[in-house]
Amino acid sequence: MQKVPYDIWMQYDAFLKAKVKDASRHAGYKKWLLYFWDFRSKYQPPETRSDQIRLFIEKLQQKKQLPEFQKQAAHAVSLYFAMLDAETKSAAEFKPVEYPSSGAKSRQVIADSPVRRSASSVQDTQRSPARTDNASAAAGQTSGSHYNEWRCLEKTASPAWDKIIADLSAEIKTRRYSRKTLKAYGDWIRKFQSFLSNKPPADLSDADVKAYLTHLAVNRRVAASTQNQAFNALLFLYRHILKKDFGDHKDVPRAKKSKYIPVVLSRREIDAVLKHLSYPSDLVVKLLYGCGLRLFECLKLRVKDFNFDEGILTIQDGKGKKARTVPIPKTITPELLKQLATVRTMHDADLKAGYSGVFLDDQLEKKYPKAARDFIWQWFFPLQTLTQVPLKKELRRYHLHESNLHEALHEAVSRARLTKRVTAHTFRHSFATHLLQANYDIRTIQTLLGHSDVRTTMIYTHCVPSKTIKELKSPLDF
Image (cartoon, rainbow, N blue to C red; front, side, top):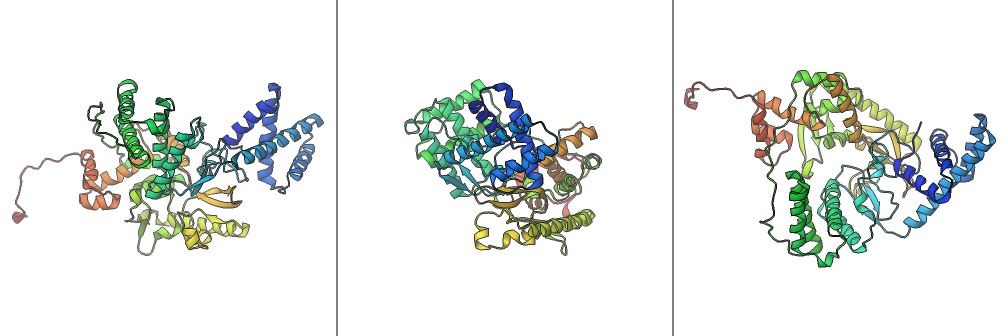
């Protein structure tokens, strides 16, 4: 059964509390909304709301539902449409802020409204069982935890701080920083705002920064990486948004970051995990390990990135907007070719259904209007469901969301009974370590991983058992 996206579900719950005073009826109303949502996804009724309600009630009659239940269902759906009308009227008062991300998610429009439909939701509706193909599918939700990851962009009681967040979004867009950077910095600025009790941004000083960083280190006792991230967010705020002196803050307690040794799996452990993974998660993990990819790099792969004739995979939009090439593992080439055929079949069906194409980065679609529907631009790991963009009324396809892999991997590791903490990034660590054990040059590994500094790659030397050299020889004696 198609489930209602979480944001819509919570909005409907709040709307019911305002419109239906009898709380005992709320559960029944929400049940009918769930049935209506599933009905609409299966039968694709006309766009006219009256026809949708009529056909839904006829379906309930076929199911032998009692007349009083049919009446309650019709009222429940009518309230849902009334909620949408109220939401549209409220959202029209706010100007959307277009934010092209670095690719962690789709190109999006983040509406700065109390009941926004964020473009992050273009993907978020796909990440949990509450996924749908319907027009309202772009309402934000999270996987299981009911956590709104873009709450920092919502309106608050302070318009001045809301403007700060809007300026932050524009500045990060101009600098072409990643979408995750916007989220992280936005969250810290909102926490800073809360700590200062909505103190006007014009009155901020470096003393406020010192007080907050001291609070994090002394009272909250946050981790070193957390404290450093907060420091960087506030530095960005003062330098680029407020245009104020940040201060040196040398006297602020700073947590010392401990040395991190990556978790590395053996080949036996990797095979044990793969044994408990099903398609397409198993193929994703094979690419993570076989090519040393980051998870977002793997999920964002497009058809054009694979050169099977030369055996080369190109990562076009890696971390820091850097591109690199890695060899395609020969052992999984047949599986990759089979996946390519699957993507082509899905793409052909999409074209027949009249969809608008995949999501493209930045202004590529304006430069190449036909690219979104071209086969070479299709995701190599596409979602099974199409996503409807409400502002444009288009059907688009997004790539597999990272939460799908996280959930599958967690279960597979549990079933494999491993005693190590395994994440998607563990396979990238294993890739580098196993190459080092095979006597590959550290510079070569650095290039394959896409590291800017060899010191980052050197961390993997701590994962390789040391071998004692009994006799040191001169190169002349080799």
